[in-house]
Length: 165
Image (cartoon, rainbow, N blue to C red; front, side, top):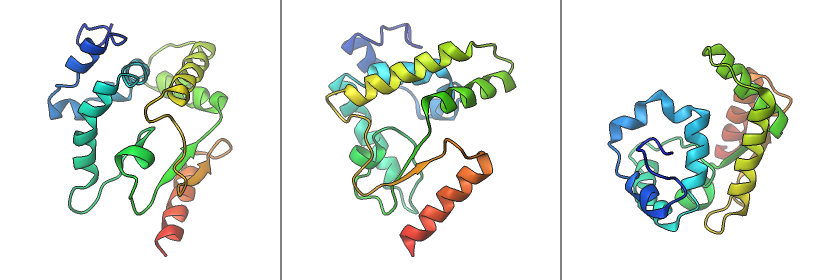
C-alpha cells in the first residue's frame, strides 16, 4: 500500500498521490526505504512522471539554482544543468550504508533484504521505458563504493570545481 492508502502499482492511485502539499517535502519519511521503493514503483506510470515533471523542473530552475537528487534528474528534469553528477556505488555497499543508517535510527533491518530491495529497485528503474536510470552523456560519474562519507563529499566538490573551472 502507498502512504495515501492507494496501490502504487495502480496508475490511477499513483497519480492521485501526486497531489501532495509542498510541506510534505520536509518530512524525513521521504528518505525511508519504504518511500524509495514506492517511488520506484509509481515512477513506471507515465501520468505520474508527467505530473511530477513540472514541479521538479520549477524547483530545478529556481533563481540561484538548486541541487537535486534523483534517478532521472540529469537526463529528464534538468538536462541542461551546468553540472551533472552520477554518483553511484555497488549494490552491496549501498545496502551496507542503508543498513547502518537504519541501525543509527534504531530500526532493525536484515542486510540481505535491504540488498535485495536495492537490486530490485535498480532493475526496475534501469528497465523502465520512460526515463530509465542511466547517467546523462555529459554527467561526471563518481563511484563512491570505496569512499567514506568525507571522501565522497570531497570527490563531488572536486568534480563540481573541475566542471565549473
